[in-house]
Length: 407
Image 1 (cartoon, one colour):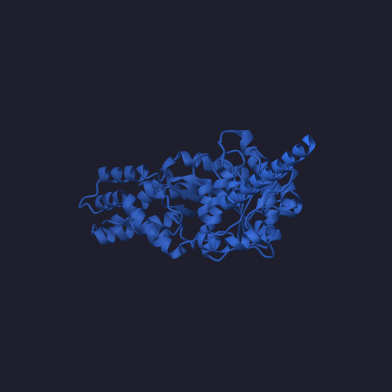
Image 2: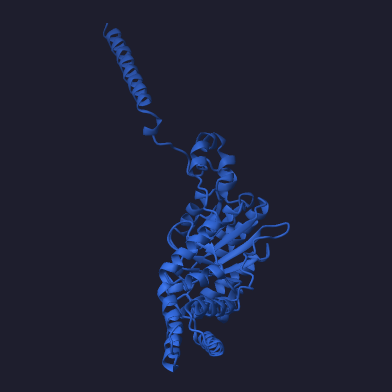
């Protein structure tokens, strides 16, 4: 009898446990799957990652030298996780921005330069329109030009030309004086220079390296330039070869994702930048894009080891493809100090063009002339502000018009 009671007790306990378990399972389902964290083995790839991308194989652009997997954004994630891609397709489409056309940027360039440089222009015009331009006036003109970072040699050249023209023509009419100054400044900046970006290459992507010292805004410039190229219907891949600054790669990837541009990056901070740059070019060739842009870490121009490493990045890229453009980013507010930076970088990586940032915040527009004279390469792009589309091709006529705007 006792054994029968024991058996009955066990059966009732089992039934009770089953009912309680069923209650909690149903309650858990009612709360939703998001309340239960997903579990997986540490070696399993994350959702949306293929086995290849997790292991950093060559097919996904990975490299043993880069110290971790290198991800080519969007395309490979879409291929590895079609269900997620389908579910998020509508959200992705709405997230991608349409960059502003280049023409609109040029109009904004003039407006902003007028605001920051009109004191410079008014000062020169007032001096040159004096009834009696004596030696003191010419000295004031020289001082104004030097203050604008035109540089000693270009300043003396411009003053000599103006002296001769004023002497020959004998005119102090404001409109005529403005015309003379416009012509001479335009000649100094040299409108005949080819300022187009070398982003056309036959049978392969054009490769653009972006270099410069710390803090001038290289990563931001790469992101803004990607928008310029997308606005011109170019297919672009970004290479995050600044592997030493915390979150630099993520910052670049964010810039790219806003306009649907993929980014090749390492998942290991401090990875070999040359390897990441190589992988980016390799991915660009594989995916047949138009342009690969490589962001590099900031360098102190007086640190030989850092500059040597920058040279290495370029040499490693050239094992896979020619480098078509090396853009040096300079801060316009640094004035003559920027010339020293420019010279050292040019010696290491053969700079082909200048990107001048923060030009809207300074009245020292003459730095354009000084830099071009120092390097023998043109200013190709100018940064106008903090907005995502505040980067524009440099246009000589618009620039000089803005310098001499008298309103």
